[in-house]
Amino acid sequence: MRTLKDNILRGFLWFAAFLTVAILVTIVGYIFMKGYRLINFDFIFGDYSPTGHGGIWPMIITTIYTIIISLIIATPIGIFAAVYLQEYAKQGRLVRMIRFATESLTGIPSIIYGLFGAVFFVTTLKLGMSIISASLTLTIIVLPVIIRTTEESLKTVPNTYREGSLALGTTKLQTLYKVILPSAMPGILSGIILSIGRIVGESAAIFLTAGTVAAMPEGIFSSARTLTVHSFLVTQESGDIELASAVGIVLIVIILVLNLLATFISKKLNKANY
Amino acid sequence: MNSIETKLNKARTGKITPIKQDSEEKAIISVRDLNLFYGEKQALFSVSMDIQEKEVTALIGPSGCGKSTFLRTLNRMNDLIDSVQINGDIVIDNENIYQTNDVIKLRTKVGMVFQKANLFPMSIYDNVAYGPRMQGLKNKKELDKIVEESLRGAAIWDEVKDRLKTSALGLSGGQQQRICIARAIAMKPEIILMDEPTSALDPISTLKVEELIEKMKKDFTIVIVTHNMQQAARISDKTAFFLNGEVIEYEQTDKIFSMPNDQRTEDYITGRFG
Image 1 (tube, rainbow over the protein chains, first blue to last red):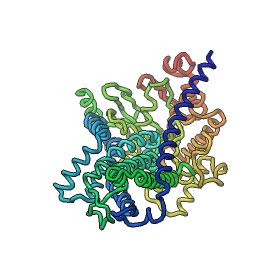
Image 2: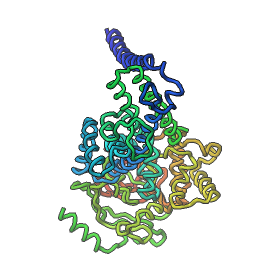
Image 3: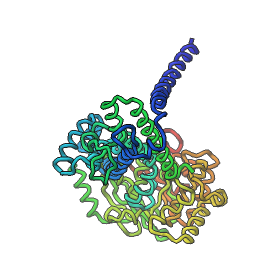
Image 4: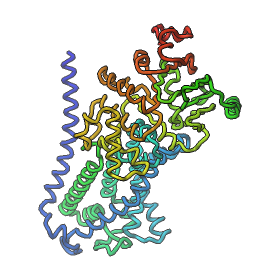
């Protein structure tokens, strides 16, 4: 009887795992089947032309721009905020409130951030519909993600490391830089990877702050179109699922490459693994 | 709260009088009327003790009696806990350690080895060189020399000399603990505090650490907390028996184990409680 129960449970676990993988494979497979015929050198590296099937190089560049700018701003702020909350701040009501706020921020739909960005960055700060407006909006979106994951990974750094380092006559800052942050680095990097996912996957907020100009951006102050926005507009305007799927394939590959890169860097940085 | 403040003032103004005149021995640590509170709860009651230079002093007593707490006041590790309040005097090398702000200097002078080996996720070399490096030492030759001396001092050089650049976390528990001792030695401290350094080790590793402690006492003053009364009897010159935050008896080790003055000491060392 007990072995039967065990087998049933095992079956359920297996089924759940199988289902998850199956869904993922189906979606990726579907997108791939739909779109792979359009993928070629000109499609990826060619300039966009409004007539017929132009390339998507401008959108790729725009997407990369938004990732880099958002992360350059959000990563240091997020890490420092998390370090403050976890290592320096007295654990009390204020810290609990800040934590509650960051947690709530992660749950807000991105369209709300988009509206805020459109009002504040685009209009009030007069940055216009531009890559920089979109990146600043995205910074606000990913900041709570980075803060939360960094805090969680700081929590996993054993207290004995802090004690061991401080007992050797080091300052708190030295302990932070030499022992705590390196130990927390894998967790911090996974937060950054999650953030890249959020940034690349975002469409509504970018749509409202960067606009939809389908041309090579001249700089970070020009309006432009990211891959997701492009995918959305193509589907909406022409119903061209094939083209949208091809863009989807490029998106998936970009995320995959960035994730692999982040994992690689994390391994390099995490000296415990050698 | 008020009572703590009055006690504090009283303790600060009180003069330091030696407990016992002993012309041959020089007290390197003098503790007078030390009271320690975790919030409202008092953990140490008026502890006074003179610890002699280049001797091994063992602190014994049942769990929760305050011996570890006391040990941690000697290098101010209790500062890490927000709720801790301390009054009384601890004088190390003619300097009242609670009246100076230079905790860094204190901790370079008073090293510590913890209950569980807490090596950093770095190589063996980097672990031992960590303290000197954080003091600003960059010279490779000098670091090499310090690392070798320290590892020899901790009687582990022969076991690890061929693998200095490999992860310290790959070593066995006993080896890790001796590297921890080497790491403390590398700072060339005067005093080394040990908080139950062998409680997580097997008997053979314990024996090695005990032999090491015997050897180290010609260069360092050692204060060791131990649960193991045989250990205290084997390695220490003086033993202090703690009970409920008070020092019940502080005497030569052979005396305390052969004819203790206090009935409670006798009950404890004969195993009637604890």
